[in-house]
Length: 248
Ligand SMILES: O=P(O)(O)OC[C@H]1O[C@H](O[C@H]2O[C@H](CO)[C@@H](O)[C@H](O)[C@H]2O)[C@H](O)[C@@H](O)[C@@H]1O
Image (cartoon, rainbow, N blue to C red; front, top):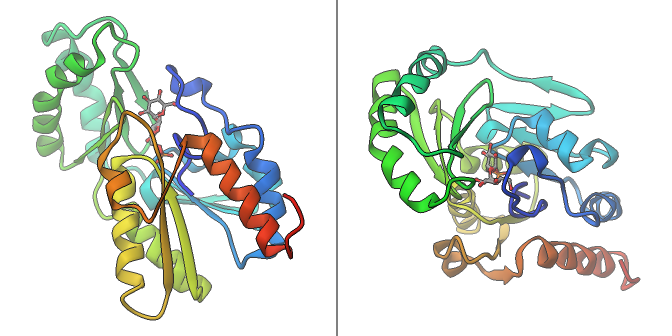
C-alpha cells in the first residue's frame, strides 16, 4: 500500500496527515492472513510509521523515500543522503525568493529528498506551474530526479522507485500474488511492476485510491475505490474473505 492519499486522507499540511482510523486495525486483522504487508511511500519510512500507527501491525515492512529506506520491526536502514540533496537544499531558498513564490509554498525536507508543496497557496496549480521549470533545472544541476505528485514537486536521488521497491519485495517474499494500492503519479512505477510480474508467474492486481486530483491512475487500475474510505472498505472485505467470511 501507498501511504498518503491511500491509507491516509490528503490534508493541507503534510505534517497533519494521519492514517484513516480504521487502517491500522484492519492491517492488523489482515496481517496473519497474508504472507506479508508492505507500505511503499515517498515519505521517510519512520514518518509513515508514526503517522500511520504502523508499528502496531505485526511484521509490516515500510519502504520509504521511494524505496531508499526500509523500516522493519523498529529498525531503519537507509543509505547516506545523496550530496545533490544538500546542494538543492542550499539553493532552494534563493530560487523561491527570485521567483517571488507565493505565500503558502512549503518545502518539506525529508533528509533524502526535498518536496516543494503548493497546496496551501491561493492558486496551487499556478504555483506549481511557476516552480516547475526552475525546479527541473535545479534537479538537473544537482543530479537529482523530479518526482511530481499531488500539488507537490519533489527533488530526489535516482536509483530507486516504487516499482523497483515493490518487485524486490515480492521476490524477497517469494510471493505468488500481489495487490498494490496507490493514488498518485509516484505509484505508476508500482503499477508497472505489478503488470510486469503478472506476465510471469505472479498474479497481480492494481487498485487506485481514486481522487479528483489524479485521473490517469484510475484508467490504469484493475479496481478503483473511493479514496482512503474505499481503501479501508477493501481491507475489511479482504480480511473477511481471507478469514473464511467473518466480517472485518
Ligand atoms: O508515496 P506517498 O505515501 O503517497 O507520499 C507521497 C507524498 O505525500 C505527501 O504529500 C501529499 O500528501 C500531503 C498530506 O495529505 C498533501 O498535503 C500534499 O499535497 C500531497 O502531495 C508527503 O508530504 C510527501 O513527502 C510524499 O512524498
